[in-house]
Image (tube, rainbow, N blue to C red; front, side):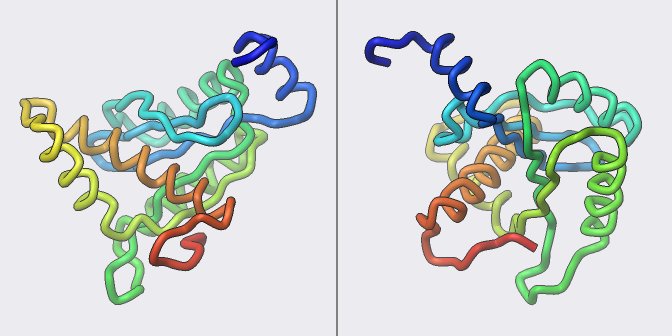
Amino acid sequence: MGAFGAATACKILRLAGMKRIMSIDYGTKWVGIAITDAERKVALPFDVLEYRGDDELVEWLEKFVSEWDVGTIVLGLPIHLSGDESQMSQRVRTIADKIKKRISVSVDLWDERLTSKEAARVISELGKKSKDYEKVLNKISATLILQSYLEAKRGLARNYDEREV
């Protein structure tokens, strides 16, 4: 990292007001979590949580946002290929409202069309097929949602317009 170490770079970015961005692949069984590097250039898989209700998830997010200096949460919004919203879309909108009420961060909804299929392709290419397939799928999906968001914000989106909804 040149003359500065990673810790120094993080301090400089915090002083400049640059907070990390995280994404959530929200599900009824598993919740995938991804976060950017300190410079907000790359999406990194972070974890997958067992879904135990919105209140518990928001409580976990409050701690995570504070600990990891997060300024924006990107929530994958499930939309059908036709462009219509799914039943799950309303649940995502509801959790987005709960997050906005309890945590002082920006919340962006992001079209996650085909993300699960792309995540499955990535897992297949890596040769990873395990009993934890669904967990890995959610974590990779969250990472792909976040990378798509970052690329669109930097004008690097491939084969699609900005997917913010």
